[in-house]
Length: 286
Length: 286
Image 1 (cartoon, rainbow over the protein chains, first blue to last red):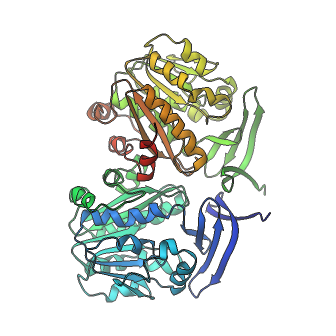
Image 2: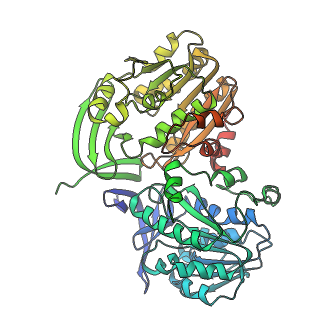
Image 3: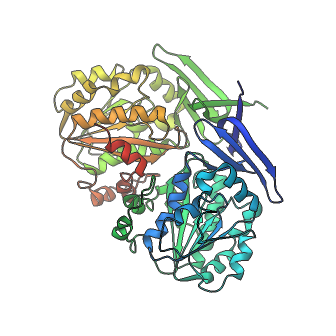
């Protein structure tokens, strides 16, 4: 019996391991190392530079929470920009909204998209099926810099961690360009790392400080992601004028009749209530 | 350099590991195997039969959420029964309420208490310091069976998983005796396992079904616990008449001025909003 374990170090002395039944594929692209594995409990999953990105078993939590929270605050969102998200899961959820007219998906690495189309159709399914999606294989930082003013109602930063190719997506200049590229009702959601382990925590606070300086409204919400370090993960909700709770359109969202496995309208508000230690860290950021 | 890893299998093919700097102590008692370890990230932690019970680094989440949620629903609670909880963390939090007049702590294994007093004073500190605590080293199932009617305002079931000595604490007869031993405003909080992995999930649903049959009010709330399987953990809130949200005494609790690291009054309500997949599992229980 093959005894092959994938392990991710969450800190130098804490690791999380999944027994794999098959190492499906491995490729070093110009940007990163991509690996696909099969496992019993988590199904197919892929890693970038050794870190879990998406597993079949728990991706619903991440993709529900990055997409449905902003869409329920402004169900009139039409033009969406996704930075990163080459696995297609975020685009898949956005495509469920009929009012969305156009989605630009910008991933620096075309290989992520092509490999997910081959090995992870569960997340990549919308990418070659929905004509509203335009794919751009380039640096997200550069794409936003060149985007026209007010071009988008929603920007979703579905990035890797702020090391390697994702680094520019955590800079002040990037957030300022996002602000400029957003319409008056614009919302920016960004992958906000985890508050628990110090190594992740540090990046989270740096990102939050910059967003707070750029956007009048800058909140943080939590969700539970078993395969990410500590299991507690955050998204940032930043906007020009819409508040995630005060402007939440509960009835309108419920009337859409979308079936979701993680998100629901009670959880929408609840996700913004954070444990005291997380709140205190965020409040102390300047 | 010593390279010694503690690993816990969360499923047959998923494991969580902590590098230990020292194996402090190991003992097989008549009931279970108890081990204490030291580590960088999680500090001192102990395991029972190989499963993590308490770590210095994340115990605050568990002990805040088992105690402050019911205390904020009924700040007049006077008599408290803790079943299990030999590490003392739950008792420590209950002792912070001046209105509490008596605490019975019932753990089947005196060695858990004595060893935590030696190796984990952070959780065990209240046990030999607070005169309101009476310790009873016996089966919690038997203790509740023999308890007088209406003897307690709050019962906290801070048990191990429903295998081995903790098994009786997940039976119908146990919950019925808890109901009988509670006063009219009585609340029962029980360790409710995790909804994510199927092996834990099954026990969670069995326990919930029994509590729902016994108590008019039976809700479930979630919190985040990095060292427990999947990181998402649940407590059950059952009571004779108090609803955890409708009867929540926000201002009275805030007026107490207790400093907490996890619990806060916004999170109190938010914790009862569960992800859709968890809600559906619980709703389908009969």
